[in-house]
Image 1 (spheres, helix red, strand yellow):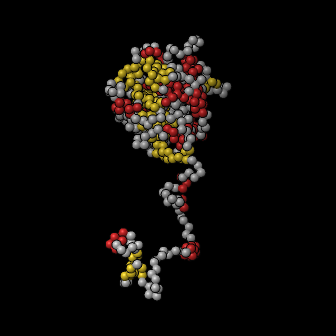
Image 2 (cartoon, helix red, strand yellow):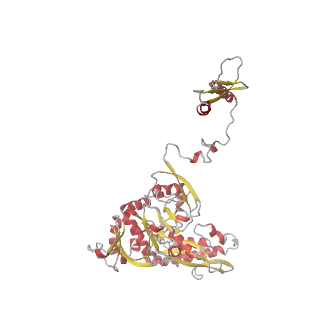
Image 3 (cartoon, one colour):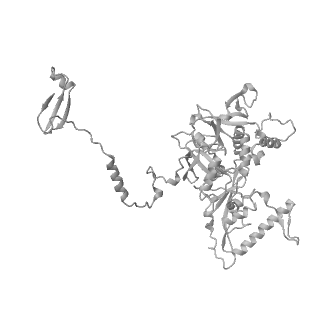
Length: 525
């Protein structure tokens, strides 16, 4: 051991001093220690241990300071997160956060359980968004880039559906109305025309086509569908017309015209492992020959363009028939159960208001005659009922015209802009956009909206769905007696504003093929 004098003592420890050049560099250690005069030996510095008395002292000091109450306890969380404590689920519950969009592009995040179905999420959104009714709501799976839309079935687990999405995609859930989800149970003949029913179906019992379809739907089955569809070839942009068959065992196509022989049938897809989507803007995105396009894809794989089987129909009725048949063959009796549950959904008291109370079934409205002394009678004769309807409409027009001509009622009492606050008014949307909105919420009889005309100044258009088609009626402003009115029948029936026009046609058909039932509304979350 060697010691060097100075303000510090350098101590070198070596195992051997015979080879100082190698030993000092290889195995020696250097330690600095202060010189202590009264101590003959050198002591090395040791770490200082902090006793517990110090921490107790700090604790006692802090406890002596009076505590200041927190004025915003709801903004403080254990993890210093900006999320409110009230919005977080309890640690004991298995909750998941999902984001749902409204039709105004605004979103709302809600906590749901792992097994929450689309029906459960809709009921939750109805309560949180303070919707006026609980009927006909749906979750829409939307793929904006690919132009795909699909209405989730009520029994589908939402988190399982989201698990198939691509993490880099723009897929979203949209909360909206859908009146046509189970419409094929109410009007099966309209959705399944006889020309598309396969002649291999069982008609040996002497049943008509409508009776056969009704019996199949009530048992949770579906008739076999057949017909021509145009399919896009994967290698080229061309479309080819192919004859398809939809059966319980799967989707088939014929390699020779419309032949049904087994040697000419080619297997296309398994119904249990696919989802069917409606294609929006198919002409621009895929070069489709018509606008009535839909596609099928494997349900367990992420949505990719190369996995899509795009099919194009000749009409909306044909497309609706195919998509409805796909749903029935895949889910069967489950759809029948969903339909029964939807009919037993509770209705709120607000459902009797304008937006929903007027959309009740026409069967609940009967023609009455109060001209006699018996207190009124129900008109059973259909011809007499129609005559009474016309007379009531004309009497209503005379009463309204008399009320509006009173001297103490100025033109500003009910301004013509009252329609702008109504849910069925959609401003200056185009004809094509109006048709898309109606199709999105369901092609059912009586679905309607009113928009500004793009071709005629100061005019409006009533867009109405009837028999799976959207019809458009021009609403023209006119003047009579110095006052402004609106009419759809060349002045025969006058309305002081669009709200009065809608209220009248929710009870009377007038020149329309069906009464106004379901307003096409824009849901905001």
